[in-house]
Image (cartoon, rainbow, N blue to C red; front, side, top):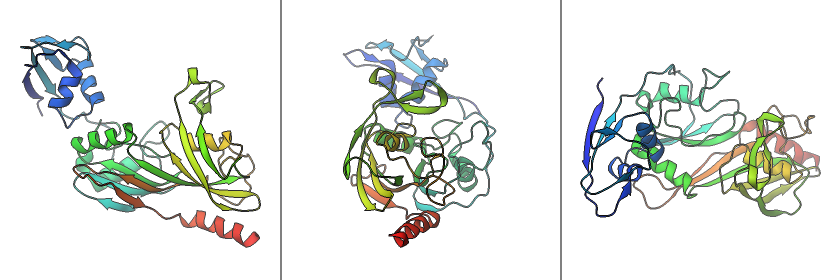
Length: 308
């Protein structure tokens, strides 16, 4: 398959960044994807390779873009059952089970959500990048619940923008050991790599991390545990798990940030993405999707209620 070649003429009176101009012309691509094309030599300005994404265009400049075909990957479609909550021509909303990794990585070459989605919808290959096709956001391996994947480039860009602009409302349920300092509240604690453990994240000083904000409220109280509803306003790695630990009430079953000895009988951490509210491509009103607590988590709550 040959590269697709597109030519554009810049005729605006006011100079503009190359990547910004191409975002307006190639609306099916994200800005990061366009920046990647520029960095990899697929964009020319006035018949010369573009120097950088921030190169300024002036009136009369000509821009040529070569869109290479999706690179072949080692991703293998697999026949893995999916709990599909919603699907249309643009996206799939899946209720991911605990124990499933979102996309292949070191140590997880198969059995991932991406492998399963490729088996269900082969056309998703290459959407948004060949390594993580369709992926817009992620959930930790042991976190269950709602996750969405884009089925075309236009939808991928739209959904990425919704997350970037914080227009998506994500709601999680978390059972924690103990209780937070107040029944409801807001946590603002920056998150970065743990300097002592590179595979872990940590709450760090502002200068060393990224802004992370979560809101929470108590749903149900038990003798030694609390069921919390979390609403993350940012999307940092392990954000809710870290913020719970920061509050002094780590998530039950969290082997990384919680108690080493589990306080209840559980095989995973008790964190579930149960509600997702988002405006879909081409729609003005946001849609609400929900996924009930998995049976293994519901059984934990029933056991705690029986102890009261």
